[in-house]
Length: 573
Image 1 (cartoon, rainbow, N blue to C red):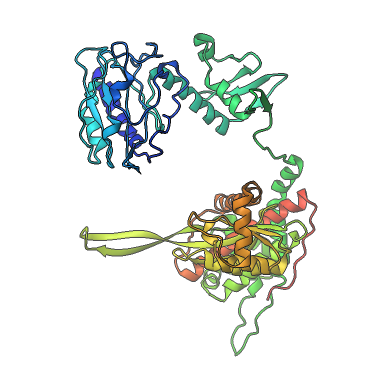
Image 2: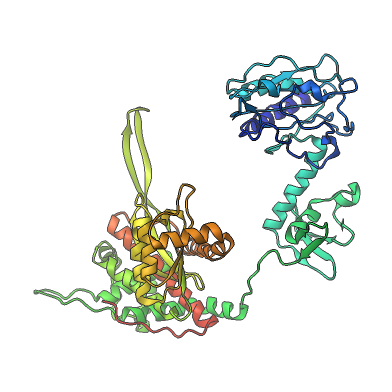
């Protein structure tokens, strides 16, 4: 059973290795890629793409400079790129090596590699026999099939670990070291590694809640792996990733200890803002709703409910995260406190949310809720995100002969300030709407309340009109170009293209601010849910706008405690 399991593992991993054959040709006499640092891959033969594979075998078929140290049988595999009649081949695989005990001989004749590439998998007559090249046949694009067919050439007692590496297959010895290196990278990314006294670092364990101490001066770690095997463990690799190590041309190393950027947090102000958020949101929402102008009532009959009370109740319902019926108690408490004149019924809230006339009102309130931070925000970022609904779209698929269905969803296009992540403008569209056409409106709405210095966005917003819209607002756009973009275009296009092409680090330093808009969308969905309860389209749009309004008010509360902002609002028409 163990042998069957290991054979299945080999088959699965060889299937992954088929991507190595997908290589693009380079110069006909280009040197082979540098092997891995493991001595099992040391090759003394000179690189040559034009000769036969057996030209590299000397002294009875044993390549020079190679030592039998790998448990994998010292099989050396290297991807080489070949040319045929001065044209690069689409695929070329050069596999050289000594046959491992009970193992496999792999070989490809680079002089015969065609545009589809060649592969030959052969079993040696005896373990340890040298590779004897033979006339090869084209793979015809089915490398995966051939690898699976010949996978049995590996001995059952020779397990193999194959990694997605462009140049080499790796045996057990080097793969174990690479596994520690990969786990070290995972620790460096996911865990918080702390600097202790001197050259000591405290590294969290990947499997339990404990920690290990790494001494970078002498290269030791207190983990059982390092103490038992005396190898470079994953914790040493993690510290090396956290520390920025630069190798100079003269061989000297320069190390800096601050590769990971951390941001300080004013915890007393944060705690105070969190504790007072609900109360302050209710007060800010009252001040914002007091600026709503009540539309005139025409005709006879009972006057309608105050629009300010309905907007307040609808926004408070979204902030509470419960249904309209369960939110009734909290809305009545706000009416008792004097926040609103009358607590509207939940059906009244639903009816008003379904009115398209409420959409521009809520959009204006979102823009007004961000204006108290105009002194803080000058740089902005734009993007879009989707909100799922509980409504399904159904159709009959003739191909499969059955009814199909999928969730409908809406897309929110927003622009945010990169300092406080406040939403300065937002537009809600159907889910299949494109991003770029909504960008000029977002810039114009932001420019009405803020001084725009720069705007960053991803490639979906790249267009002449969008670059011109940012410059018309007095800002500088930072939008990356696509691979097929050229420098010809408007003056704004040419200026940004030259910056992107000639000074990429400066461009990326500004473009990196765009990540704040992703954090904003994540915060909105985590706090106020990424799905919509409403069924009808207008109600869905207004519900999303209420979520953004609640987020802005919560952001404003934190700015009050952390930045000392005193919010004031203007009239909302």
